[in-house]
Length: 447
Image 1 (spheres, rainbow, N blue to C red):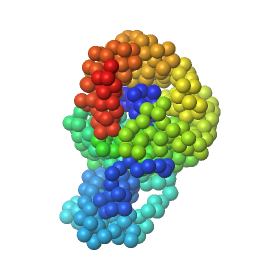
Image 2 (spheres, helix red, strand yellow):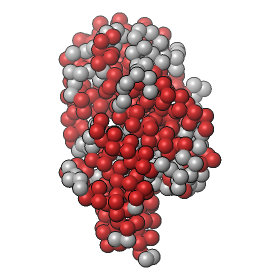
Image 3 (cartoon, rainbow, N blue to C red):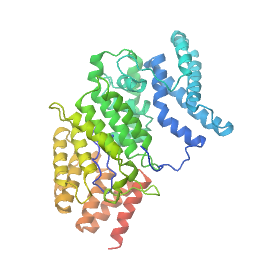
């Protein structure tokens, strides 16, 4: 991963971490059938894929995904016409299960797999919301993440497979997160699935050594899952709390298991809690993004901030210092600053410098430049950015243009600011970010 922006010091609290309750971020009514289909797509899609894949084997993941998608589309039609079933989750599982059995029956070569799995599938259909906690990794979805993170699959292809198959990301969302073209995403997805078909893993008994060697890739997937919830690539949904909650749930499971109980996991979980504590304050009443200095800090979840501090303290054991430690430290500085004006910008700039040494990325330097601009003024931040030779993929990234535009605006370079902000506006992925950039342009017009 080339890296995601740090937190909260750009135009707004829009830059992603490394990867609750509050106001709704969707115009959909979650009690309506269409709202529940969206809800279950994000909450249950990956879980259903993981449970069914465990029954029939990872080589049949394409058939499993087709079955789950069919169940969701059937729900959209059936629930609108007939109303919601008593247990929507169980209903989705049964429809997906029945469709999968039908698909496997149509392939004689899969008949023995079907016969071996049918009884277990039928029993599991009665308890779709209660995954087993057996073998090395508790929870089917978390174990399936380890399956997807096979080192024999190229790194970006692993991430594409996990994000698409288990996290329900669209091709466009994955392309944005990994700085790939959509065509490249599809190629990598096809290669990863082909590997699973040719070298199917034993889903229930991955050896301990394999789990440990795949842990870093699992961290990245969980990090990106939280990122998508924290600042969504969906045009009309800026914050997707359910994805943040699921990332925290899975990372907590990982942190509580001997395989995942490492300082890096603890730091990642601390990072998620610090950012999760501030989700409620990130949007205004109309769903627009709020600048960090505009946010009502009384809305920040103090209990979740304490959890972040506890996990960060646990992450400090030993001599390990990872990118997640640096990013959690940055998030903690924001979380515990008494006010925006009293934020310790020098410490944040220093942490970004440490982060860039651990995980070099021009995005880390970009965020450091913004921290320096808050500490020493916009010209100091611009001087650092001018020293960077951005790679081609960064030149087309909207946040790069947005940061340059904002720093030029603060420095009084109105023409440069207008040029960069207009470029950022042309490529910003969400309505809320585009509206924020329009506000910035309007502020220039008034000068």
